[in-house]
Image 1 (cartoon, rainbow, N blue to C red):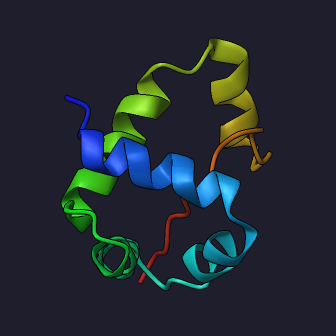
Image 2 (cartoon, rainbow, N blue to C red):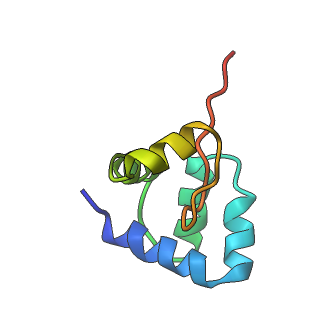
Length: 85
């Protein structure tokens, strides 16, 4: 289920180079949620994870194959990575 606050924040990030730089420097999804809160938005790191999962499920098979190969997809703000440890 889409979170309107999160959707609005992500659109703002895409349109503001300085905010995109701050967004890109966030070490995790909770830090992105904190950045959103600084901008007056209300969502959590879990909301971001759900958004990312839902967006992934909407990708075409060829886009999923590209993502699995590590290709950055146009229009996405972050890449998922698996850390084994």
